[in-house]
Image 1 (cartoon, rainbow, N blue to C red):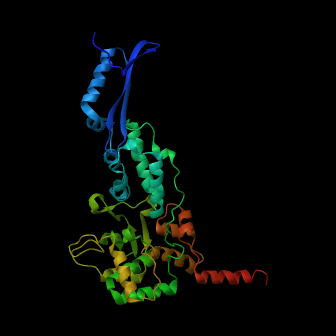
Image 2 (cartoon, one colour):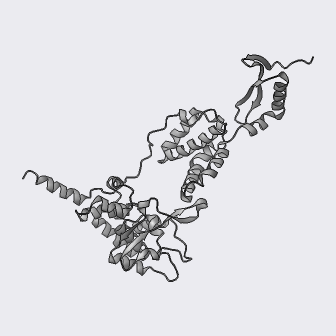
Length: 370
């Protein structure tokens, strides 16, 4: 009778005698030992066959068959995710992965991602990236898929403490808008810098359009008789970095807004024959989303005295000056123009009190007891 392998052990169950074994195959490329255990064999020969097969395949083949790198799981997850969201959302997610996950974790086998390792990763991420929670959300969804597919016994990200805030300072949005005098000074400089720049920022400041909404405008969206602008699309970066247009971000973002006479005249002054786009390249392509920021920097370079705000700050400016200039305008009116989903968004983000508004409040308070 041939000598039996001592690694194979007989044990009793309610269903009868069974066989199990445990064996060491070697180490993976990270130095982690690969110990394999199997049980439930009804006879010794089946257990011996499985043990010999595993050992003959070796540690490299075992790892290839039974372990997956994070990047492998991400590609499987993303192939499904890309069909569920807008192209721009898919591209943003993919960029987050490439910029903040792939280099640190992409080549790591998912079963080697320990809670301690991921805690350090999350802490470092929070210290260097404001939107770190979005990145961790992507990582969590990928690890959940690995768990479902059997490559993990538990999700290690569930065992870490998500940092509550980043040490990196957020942009000061409380002052990211102009008062009336500041806006006039800016537009005067813009007009002297470049006519197209002037038209674009005048449009933003007097309509509250988002940067991407203005860049996606077609002439058919401009009603010259009714003096209105219809917001039907927004410019976005699709997969592969290609510029695409897509429906506005929410139902209320699709809207019709009034424009003043000067805005109409300025828009007509830049109209080019043979193009259906309001803002376009010489080849009738959409302008890059980074263009307005470049224009803004050129204007600031011309006049160093101007206080700097972001392109989005002109939307803030529109809302703040609109409410300040007319006390009968309701927040819901501004909400409709800006295309906010809820009025609370309008109140929370855009109705900053300007200095002149604060001064009027001060005089009103003084009159309370006089």
